[in-house]
Amino acid sequence: MASGPPAGTAATIRPAVAADTEAVAAIYNQGIEERSSTFETEPRETADVHAWLMAGERLPLLVADEGGRVLGWARMLAYSERAAYAGVGEVSVYVGAAARGRGLGRALLNALEQQARELDYWKLVGNLFADNAASARLVKSCGWREVGLHLRHGRLDGEWRDVLLVERVF
View 1: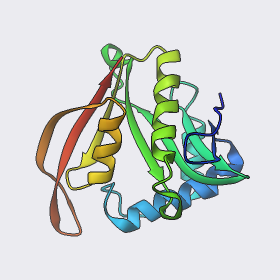
View 2: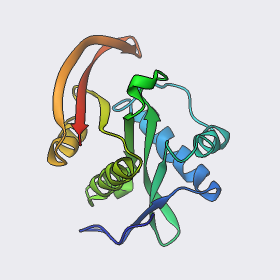
View 3: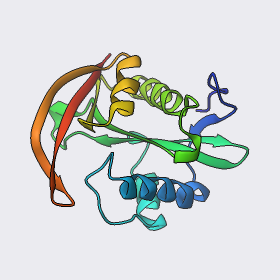
């Protein structure tokens, strides 16, 4: 599955391949360093991302590729191992700092939603830091709704962080 260039960018959204793992890890590590999107604190290695690729077709990893450069990625995780939740996926979207503001997050999220529908998912969920206004704007503009707020959900660098729960039901 590949899609044409999203509005505002010349990037193509496509499934990730092994050659993308270093760039995907670098973008995620940038997000870890920024402390605005994840509770992860340890950098990810290329081998970690390679394991994501091996997760199978039902857990896709997509990249925004511009001229052979990966500028961002989106990934779907299983929400739960319980059979009742087989059609619910948890979503992550990351765009490298230098490529933000070009519509890549929207293009990645839209492509991941489309793939989720094709895979018979009925719902996608996300967990956003409550103070991450850019991510909240992105999901809202793509038709997601706010479900609730986990107060003091986790600590990052000794500070409590609240987490906004969002969902997209098909």
